[in-house]
Image 1: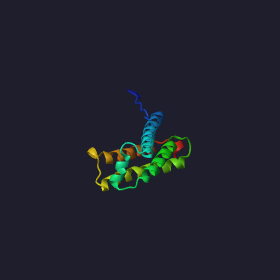
Image 2: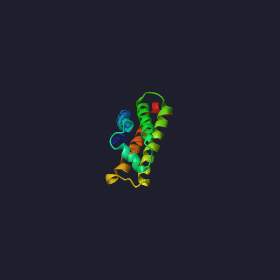
Image 3: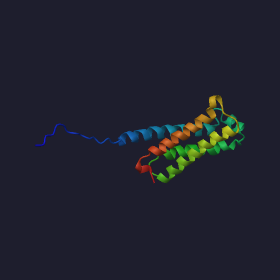
Image 4: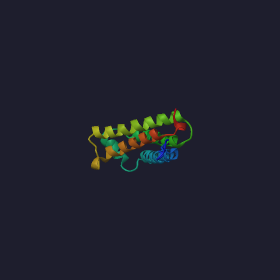
Length: 140
């Protein structure tokens, strides 16, 4: 005679796709807003951008070039479709931000408490998070 004393139940835990989408959009919108505001500031030469560029030895016209790229890139990040363009934008933001941090480091322009290095690296980290969380519809 066989008796069953207890029953084991196993539950499969799955990650919530809705939570991933909310995380993706939160990070991506924060990144797009930060890059857009930074680009507008560079185009208008606001907030010490001129001094920062002069301090590290770049010509002032670099502000216009970077500002245009940042504004267009932030728009491309939130537009529907164009997955290949989004891949290029993520790569561009990563190279732009790590390049900015390295430029400041090589010029010994760390800013207060390393701000000139920490800020672009935090944008690069947001960029990596946005890329890693992207939904399948935004992948190649």
